[in-house]
Image (cartoon, rainbow over all chains, first blue to last red; front, side, top):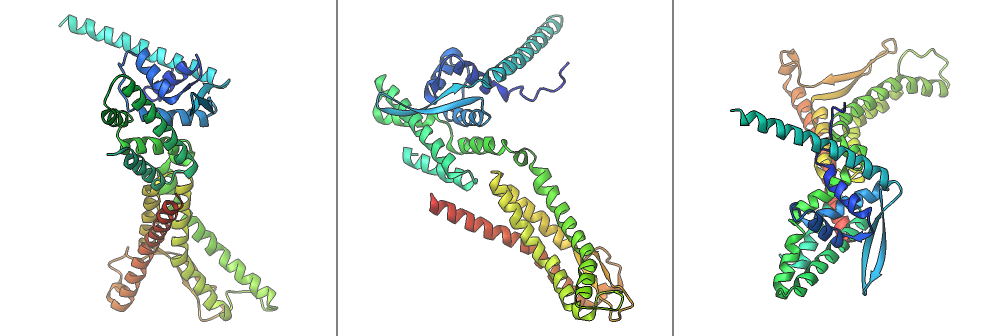
Length: 116
Length: 251
């Protein structure tokens, strides 16, 4: 049984970023729009916060970036590297474990309070 | 806040926190491109250009918080950044005492070496009188020179690992306080027979000591302690001034 869970919330943005970039390469703004779309705008965050996350993932070797010219505009595009896939799997498994735990806890609480 | 003023502020904050200029440039480029994209999309949806400009900037988030998030991410990449208390609170004191104790242990060895090299046929029984001023000078250096040097080393380390001025100041203050309460002392004997005494003293521990009544000596000790407290802080101040002005000029 894993007792500690340091990535309880810290890993969530990384997980989202890695998950979306595993499908195709994207630039920061596109990624933010995609996060808003897939989460149906349920996550509120300052859009600028995506860049430090992308940069640290790139530093870890999980993402790679390149400057690309599209429609006359130059942008940094990010993609998942080979080292990124295991990291995504690990974060997804961790998140699933946390989610299941919370669902169980919430279910337990509902039952307890239903009896009151 | 206007577009350029917001990015200028962000740039200033990031540089001030010691982030590399290349990284700051890249982050600003990406953020301004992001804002441009947001503005473009908002205008395509029929929004007024001024309002689109304002909204796209607001969507990036609070500039101060953004600077804090970016520098925090950078800081956490290094082991020093992840354990700042260990490296900027505990390590300076350990380093100070370790350096001092090693220097004290080395002093008799160096004295012996100098004595032998200068052709001393007599068995070494303590530092020869001609070395007294050098030993005293060395202990003055240990008491007054080592502290600002270590403080500067800590400041440079904090900058190198993006830990910011807060931890550099913390390390300097800790060194200053260590300097205020403790000092290295040397007692050199007038006669050769006595090997002398080297050690670590504490200036203000024994208030019941009769020496408290020797006002002149107490005043001198107090002034020396205050100087030792201020020297690392002065080193930090100098570093802060040079670092800020140089980096901002460079940028």
